[in-house]
Image (cartoon, rainbow, N blue to C red; front, side, top):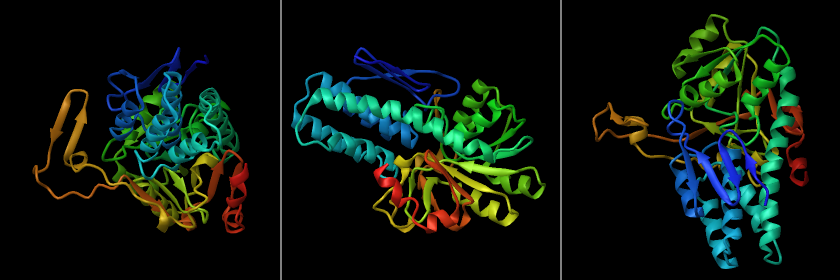
Length: 341
């Protein structure tokens, strides 16, 4: 039986563990997954997050389930439940659909396919980094939003993978990290990864980016994505649209980095992307490894979408594992051609 290990996921001897990202950076707790229902809980609670990582983690939980002797009807039931656990991140659906695409139920073949999804994501991240590093220049100050590294993938990451690749090439860069309210994936997770990588960074609140841009302190911005429509519109963590608008106004290049598995070939534009709304208490306060703090009135009316949609017109490059694409490429339907990659 194969074994796999990444920054946030372990699979060995049919034992599957995920790093509980809710407690980072101050507590590294590994959670063991015994059944796909455990993985569904971890996905919904954001103990495991990041579109590519969710897809691979869900697939390995099904591989584990099959190795435990799951019957075909049990496998399908759990696969569909996992597929529906988060509505916006299309990588999850792409991975599950690959496991459901069979004529004859063959557990060993399905387990092997799940393993290949892990290996593929590592390769996809490497390719994204290769294509994207050219856009990061020596001396750049790069703004990023949310978390897009090894805590969001099983490889080096998407946007953060590009940044890390440029840094490894010897480019002197500085990263400005949006805190990323309401769950602080930038403040808690991206900073955690940048410290491990030794890359210089400055943490800022989300509403500070405009001030830095006005001062000429941001050279470019790069984010990840949870779903890309065929016209180039894309959904990402709430606040990404803000960054894109600010970059457009200040004439700062704005890039999105993602694998081909993030492209939704059935989605013509961002208007068709479903947006998940989450629990009000994520905005009313904060939950850490030490407990919950509520700072608003407990019955405050809350609007809490997890994602927003950035229009293609605000994007300078789409950096995928297959290459870096311009607006002209997107208008010429380059994304459609990736379907049979």
